[in-house]
Length: 204
Image 1 (cartoon, rainbow, N blue to C red):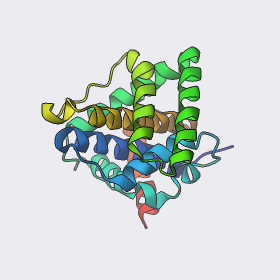
Image 2: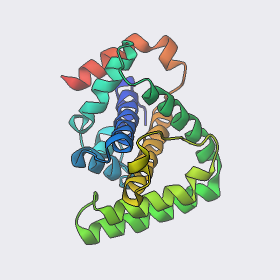
Image 3: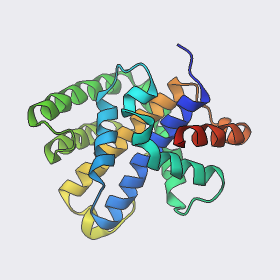
């Protein structure tokens, strides 16, 4: 199956959107429920054929597309977000080479998906706790570690930490998708204009 630059920017939007929620939760203790569900659902849709199916629709990653548009035009307001995104992209490279870790993550995702179906809510705190535990037991032990800064009051709360880890798992999932659709670091140097045009098409 061939993929286009439109597919790649959707995957990048998925990363940006998940990490923006990580930043928001770490600073305020609160997240946007609909955005979190989009991220979690993308983790569960392992066998989807297209990025649109993974996220439900391009509209579901519109916040991430707008973020990506701003950063590609050097208008991003959060300097930490691109650093987090780079760390996630680097972590994904290590993750996919560790086959035992990939298998453990897959098994954990299956457990969380069954839990979500039972509860009827992919954004339920118990589901986020399960996914957060999967990330903590597997990917978080790989290098480079993704270091999240924020308000110590919120980062000391188990529910907040679990939700952040679940979203980091979703960000890594989107990073895997970016690679699968042909994404390369060179894109940010040589395909910036094409990426901006692709984002604009998705946002129309």
